[in-house]
Length: 137
Picture 1 (cartoon, rainbow, N blue to C red):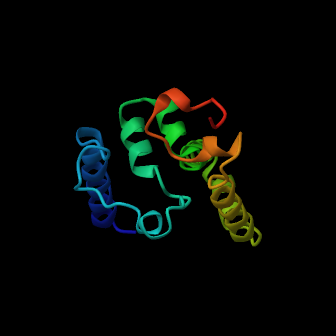
Picture 2 (picture 1 turned 90 degrees about the vertical axis):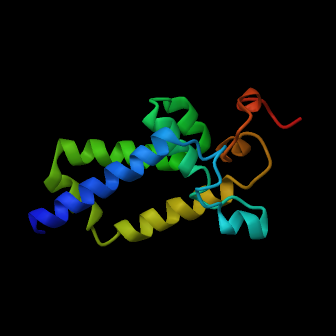
């Protein structure tokens, strides 16, 4: 990859992260809503990711976890593994079984976060922090 492309990607990433830092996806309608949730009233694996990124830019890790734990864990795990060993990171990502494992984790997360029973309802993105660890009332 050329230096110009890397620089362009870096600048684009900085702009996107800045948008999430300065604007809250809960209060500004600039950010797109999840079309899957709007049509089915079910959470997709990505629901809550925008609010989680906003929380991460403000170093609110627990808030980010409450919005989308899969995205936060994947981000930290991937970044940590990449920093630890790029070679090991690429071997893990490009392993022949990796797509099946990743797909299975995403589908399992998708199903579990839509179950309205304790403790799985905790996986659903929330905006009301008071009911995070409480069973459904």
